[in-house]
Image 1 (cartoon, rainbow, N blue to C red):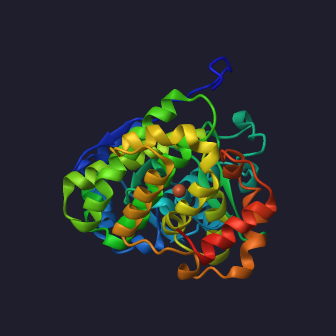
Image 2: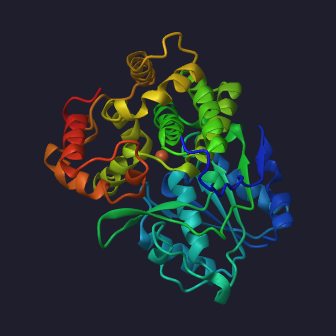
Length: 388
Ligand SMILES: [Fe+2]
C-alpha cells in the first residue's frame, strides 16, 4: 500500500434518509430552486404507487411537474435525447430522477445534456471532460432510489448504451452532483422478492468490487466494509420478509454506502456485466450476481489481503478465501440467484466478443488482476457454462 501518493477525495452529497421522507420532496424542490421539475423514470415504474405519491406531493407544494418514462432497463442514447427534448419543450428547470439504476441513470444523463448542446458521448468517463464555462449550468438534480441496490443516487455517473456501437459507456461530469439524494425505505416495500434479490446483490458486488480496487482510499474502503456488513446481514431478510421496514432501511443505507464506495472504482464483474447487458438486455444486478463467484475465484490471488477484512465484516469465524467464497455462494443461493449466465440467456459463442469489449470498460482498469483477452474470455465462458 502506498500511503504517500497524492489523492483527491470528494464527500458525497446531502442525503435525506428515513421512512416517509418522500413527503419532503416539495420543500426540497423549493430549497434547491426547482419550480417545474421533470420527473424521469423507467418504463417499469409507470403505474407504481411511488410515482403517483411523488407527483401528488409536488402538486401539493404548488409545483407543476411532468413525467418522462421512456427509459428502458439498459438506458439508451436515443431515450436520453427524447428526455432532453421534453425538458426543453416543457420549460423545465430541474430533474427528479426516480427509479432503480436505469431510471436514475436516464435522469442523470438528461440533466447532463438538457441545458447545453454538447454531444452525450463527450461526457464519457475516460475522456477529457468538456469545459462547461461557456455553457449554461447543469439543472438541479434530485435522485430518489426505488430499489436498494444501484447506489446510483450520490453521483452523476450514468451507464448509457450507445445504440450505434452496441456498447455501454459510463458518462458523467464533475460539476453535476445531485443537490440531494432522498432515501425513503417505504418506497422499496413493494419491490417483489426477485427484484429485491437481484438489486440487493448489485449492492453486494459494489461493496466487494470497490473494496478490492487496489490503492489507498480509506474513505471508500471504510464505507465499503460497512456497506458489505449491512447488505450481507439484511439482504436475505428483505427477500424473505418484504414488509420488514428495518431490513428495507438497512438495505437502502447499505446500498447507498456501497454506491459511495465505488467512487474508487469497480472490477471485472461490472466490466463483463455492462457488455452482457448491452448485448442481451439482461438485468444488471442479476448479471452481476451470477458473475460474482467466478470473478472472485479469478481474482483470488490478487485479493488475498482484502478477504480477511471482508470476511470479518460479514461476521465469519473463518477468514480464508474458501470460507468467504462459500459464504457468498450460500447467500446467493439463499436469495435465489441462478448459477450460470446460460440460465439468463447468454449464449456460449459470445465469450470472446464480450471479453474484448469488457477490457475496454473503465471497470476493467480497476480490477485487481490485470488480464489478457484470452483469460477474460475463459472466465466469461466458465460463468456461462459452470458458474459457481
Ligand atoms: Fe452495479
